[in-house]
Length: 524
Image 1 (cartoon, rainbow, N blue to C red):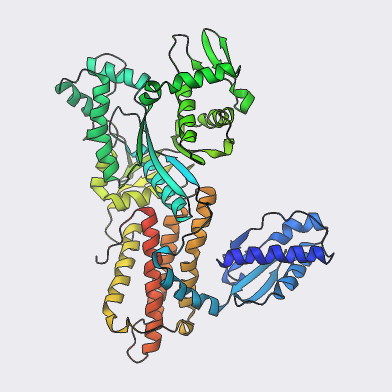
Image 2 (cartoon, one colour; image 1 turned 90 degrees about the vertical axis):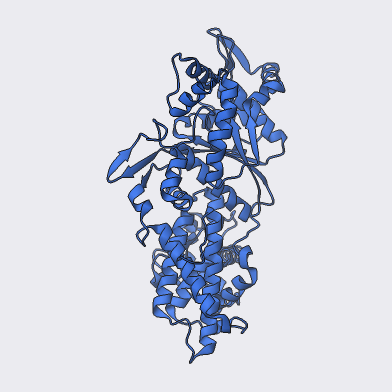
């Protein structure tokens, strides 16, 4: 990646300047390379000079001059030129030759393009959805479902081994309320599925849980295009005495105490904001005790990192989960809770809260039936986890370029159509050196950003940049298609070069859609 090359050059330049005595000795800080927003300032910008100003006691512009001079000593064909701009940026302009060569590289790598080795083959558990097994999955559950699945795809693309897991909370208060629902007592769950269970004379909550899983939750998950590696039942932690073992472990470590008839865990000693109850005064274990046992179980299965998607109401769980990891002897950073904010469904400017099908909330299957799984996935991926999501049902139903999914898939179908029409040119070797038009070069720049998108998303989990990238790539392709005639019988060499670029675009767009779990139709 050209961005990584810039980082390497900057780090090498700093170390050389330290050797020469121009800079004092210091630990080189993290070097960040940003994509330039304005073409005037090149393709990539380095702002390390501003970060070094206080350390080396020179002005950012002077530091930038020193670094530019040092970088210019390295012979490479990556850059057309390197410039300095106030207050101390170093701007890099990618060379045509480098960009042209990338087309050949993508054609060589095909679906492997964008694959990285950032994860050192880490084994990562991604637990998501994990909705209570007391009713159908609603659109709020779906957000974590799609996002968890796509994050797992990205982590795999970066060289990790991911394991998708659904935690079935088949113990505790929600199962008691489900039992009440079957018996006509309060508090109870509403919904047509409860009426159906009553008609079928289901008496036991455990039986009801199995029916809800098999007839409501699992079919919805399948319809969402998600395949879990494991459905983990909370009841198994009790059957295998793992709850008791964890409780005994904490007591032996002198990490529990009794207060107001309950047993508490000294979680503040491990960074939590307050101590937590493990066993209530009625002798019932809390969810937190089973959460600790579940964390222990995951670590014992050899996972290096645990990503856990949680609903907006679970914000307080972050501190306690990290405290639990610490007491179990693991780095708190290995536990990475992700809080998903709420979803609002809008139709004709009004919010939909009730469903005709379920009688209560909007089930995800109902939404998929209305707009399809591709549109559902894309729309749920477009906002950061911490932002509320407004799902515009009218836009989602649009079969025009107003709908971003239609716009992207139509572009892919157009690319396939171009390549079908160009069968005669397929066997000829392309001369990518003929790709000199600004729209051609801009398209290549977008294509090679794919690896950077993967790298950035692995670091911060902000998967909303993937659908945005797909849109940016398609816009660049449309601009190229409008400004450059792809098939020109009078100029077969240029035609071949442009077809190679179209093929490279097809490969990267398909890779992007695959990451999102969205289909790539060859005809529309």
